[in-house]
Amino acid sequence: MDQFVVEATKSTPRINLNPATHTHEIAGESYPENSLSFYGPVFSWLKQYLADAQGKAIKFSMDILYFNSSSSKVFMELFELLDTAASSGASIAVDWRYHEENEVALECGEDFMEEVESLSFNLVSYS
Image (tube, rainbow, N blue to C red):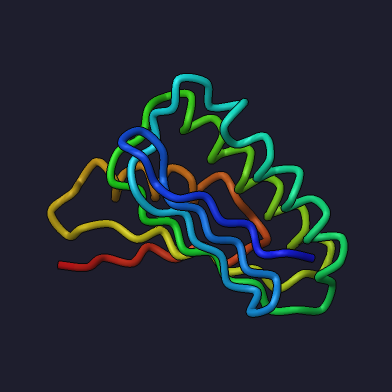
């Protein structure tokens, strides 16, 4: 399976999904004109990857500086997909990274964390 990389734009995050290292990153701002269209290929890739990655320790890093409500819905779908895989035995950790002064990002991370049951969801502040 090939690595999935999308470079950041003004309104979309950098996405780096690496099946060789099982480390994945989404970072930047997320307010694409059509979130479902933008993130659709990410979900297609992840579904295939998760089916093939049984028994691997999988790490996600999310460092989203700003996102709109449609991106929030997509992120919730992402966490639900990962949570389902974790409930089936996959070892998945998500680091929700936020700047220590960004209270909105912290609160969003806390909201997402409350919605998952089986994956490890970590709030990670940085300065």
